[in-house]
Image (cartoon, rainbow over all chains, first blue to last red; front, side, top):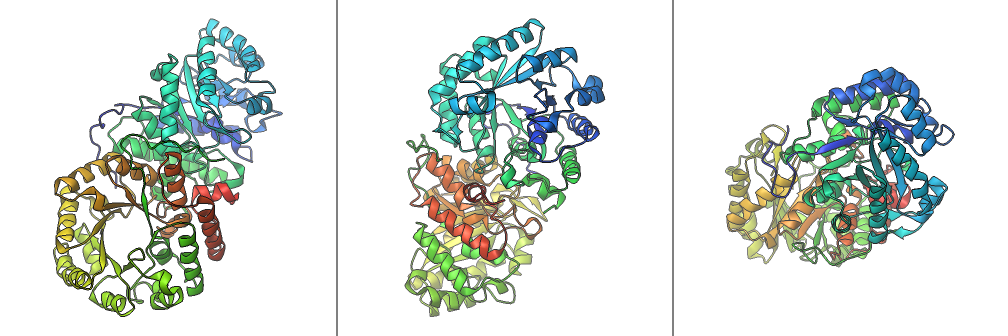
Amino acid sequence: MREPQIEPAEGLPERVRIYEVGPRDGLQNEQGIVPVADKAEFVRMLAQAGLGTIEVTSFVSPRWVPQLADAADLLANLGELGLGKDRPVLVPNEKGLDRALDLGVTSVAIFASATQTFAEKNLNSSVDGQFDMFAPVVRRAKDAGMWVRAYVSMAFGDPWEGHVPIADVVEVSRRLMDLGADELSLGDTIGVGTTGHVTRLLDGVEAAGIGLDDVAVHFHDTYGQALANTLAALRRGVSIVDASAGGLGGCPYAKSATGNLATEDLVWALHGLGIETGVDLDQLVATSAWMAGRLGRPSPSAVVRALTGAS
Amino acid sequence: MREPQIEPAEGLPERVRIYEVGPRDGLQNEQGIVPVADKAEFVRMLAQAGLGTIEVTSFVSPRWVPQLADAADLLANLGELGLGKDRPVLVPNEKGLDRALDLGVTSVAIFASATQTFAEKNLNSSVDGQFDMFAPVVRRAKDAGMWVRAYVSMAFGDPWEGHVPIADVVEVSRRLMDLGADELSLGDTIGVGTTGHVTRLLDGVEAAGIGLDDVAVHFHDTYGQALANTLAALRRGVSIVDASAGGLGGCPYAKSATGNLATEDLVWALHGLGIETGVDLDQLVATSAWMAGRLGRPSPSAVVRALTGAS
């Protein structure tokens, strides 16, 4: 059974744009490498299920993320379906941007850090230094007419530094927008945040002059908080939500439990609230069940499990 | 790392009373039968971790729930720790109440249905008929000075009937309170509800003259909605929440994923909001990790998995 749809409650958006990260953030965290034909089929099925925005892959170095070494092949396989404003590709640096430009990509995402330690470990840079790295990426992307998203990772907690001060996240967010980014995605990379923290962070971001229409939220379910945090963000004025079909992604030490917010669980919550997503839940569940079969393990999404009877 | 505790946000309670259902609702759904000594140790560890209210067991017929056939032995093992207002025992009928009275239990819970089909299947009765069954249970319990909780099961959806009308749930709730129950627990037995539905149901219950101070909520995570729904109830004025240590319980077809709201995941959310629970989260996680070891499978609680590195 489904919840009967009602009018959106006061203070909630009538429509949410889901930014699907399964093919990139999900599959890059798989231990195995999914064949490129399966990835292409996955993207096609997601688009068919009504997901308008799909982050397709990343032009990261295959040395660091061998799972996505086939980025160019995937785009070739997808053809027109893999291009356009609604098919962003992650580019870690100018080299990644060059590859994106060569292949006709018109929408890119960069991945910044709110903390010093993660900037060092993930970007081999620093909080300040990362802007020098991203400035030419964003400038050249905008000059080429691209749409640019900027992720702010470790926006709540950091495994090395602990609690991340809201002022630090706001400062990084402000500087990314000043570089020319079109959209921010605030990411709770390790999943520790709670609902009050979400609200306060969004208060801070808005107070810094960033309109919440340009802000997405990106939650991981490591501590079971992802959906609750997402709904808190919607109540605070956000209407763009990152999610991963089937809950793909996340920590390798807890394979079936702590990935990204599952798109299906999000859609269940939103449709129950009468919020439009454009997604056909049954088609989406079938897509994730199919991918779970390819990966050889059950989907971590509660909705996928419940509707398919998988254990 | 933990979220730094803040002042509770406006509209949220300063303190939540967690009604721990793991030993009863959790273990009754296990396929195997846990030894009585382990059950007693579980209750002791839960009490030690700061859970004030613990539903200890059920005086249900061993024919229906062999997992709890040891109810009297468990109480004998627990001694004083198993008795009192904060150690309710489920009694399905007068026969169960007789056993409770014999053993010095002073707090009981009855289990009603909001739907006709479940009343027939679970109670061998009807929505109307169940009140004839419960009336003498509640009257005799109150005459004996007991505290009485009434569960309303299938309060959101029903696997046979689909959506359950709010008016039906309110009517059953009102009649249970009229019988003399001290507290209601509104249960989303199959986990389909969403946050707007929670708010509307509580609106209806309150409009029927039932103070929300006497209302608990009981969510299952079958569709990943349990924590979000619980927080919606807290915003609407509820301050009593049912949860199950380690997320024990739930549907046998999805063993590690769709039980009750995990007490740990709830406590993480509440402490992050600065809401007091009296629970020591580390001790609680250790308790659930120990029980998971006894059961031979990982805990479905995200917090337990994250903090113990279990997969």
